[in-house]
Image 1 (cartoon, rainbow, N blue to C red):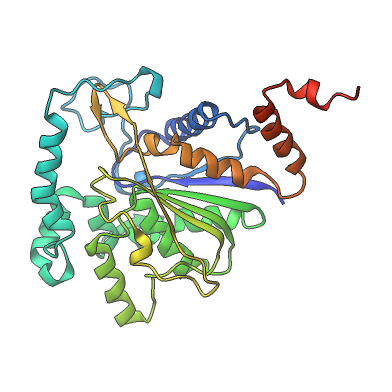
Image 2 (cartoon, one colour):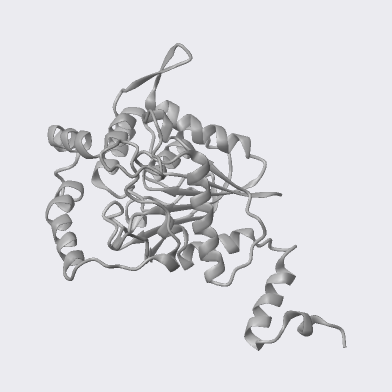
Length: 329
């Protein structure tokens, strides 16, 4: 069966799909190359939904910071990055986030129990998430459709398109919320071999409270591993990623009926742009050794490619040329 990798991006406006897809692929190949994996050309598709909530995409060529299409961060290879932040900058930034953000997102203020404060914070800082959870309607071919449904449709249609393939789904940030909703609500019968969530907010109290509230209203339990995930759900988080602040999702999400649990992995997101690090950025997650290993394992067939994998590992151990090792004397 053919294999495909499908990626879905996170919250906020993005550059055009062709650019974002290229940057995701560049990041993935960066990690594979750095950690000595040599895959063939990847069958990779991007689920792009930023255009549903944003009129115009971000423009990587725009230099005016005051224009709405200006990009504050672009993809840059790891080899061209270096942290130049002033001494104490990182610690001060973390302390600030811990003082304010953590109280809002973790300690109960940002929850359905404090709805007014929650809605104000979401409106000010997470408008895409607000549009997703609130009854916001969009015009589509002369008909009104919920923004949430339009977003879910993008992933639903892409997974249906490739239902006959072995699927690795990579979901960044809010993309993990969309993925969880689609797999449980929309496509319980479509198999996902492996799910990777990176920088996921699924452990945040606001999301957990929403899912708990849905369960009471609709008898849908989303605080569990979807049964259609067959082999793995890997959740990758950097300890300094303030979106993935509750890093161990396995504490909050029950095992599937097939006894599959979330495999939480702490990683180092090394993304840096113009001297400032961003441990939440998708590009940094995608080039980690953990993602490279997961992708390599996914691509390797249990049977067809086992010979090549054994040959590669033996060649590394013995430090000899592969051709010499397997040449008939």
